[in-house]
Length: 181
Image (cartoon, rainbow, N blue to C red):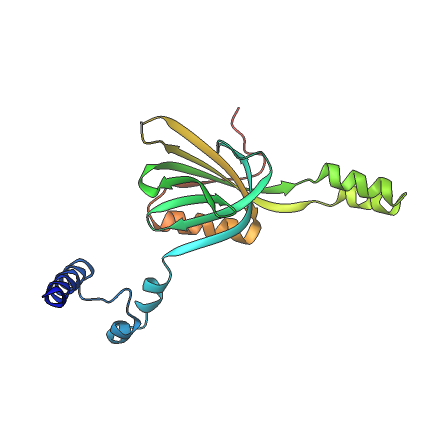
């Protein structure tokens, strides 16, 4: 009798999955064989993970300049540090993202190396690291305006920009020196 109940529940769940996903087996790769080639990558790629981004501001409990992982899905933006999820923002609540390319300076580390090497390290002071900055403007669950500032490697920033705009988020690109007065 229990086997019959489980069989019925499995059949109902399977039928619901077919109705929701239109007969496409998301979780079962063998059911994806009949799909066109261009549809297969869309099913497999449902998230963009950007490791080791810099948190600049906006996430409570996370200190400035600490590293974490940024995960973008078709439904939400997630910032996590280690295995702990620090913030989750549904894509529908993101009002706007400002995207800028710039440079990151490592003053403390650079000066320490310059002093420790007695001169040759001084050339490091002029070196800069290129980064992309994402300023994410969103509303929280109570309707309050919030913001997060994150810096990524240059190649990862453009991937984030493209990913967010693909899912309907308004992304505005700011050029260096174009600050409004």
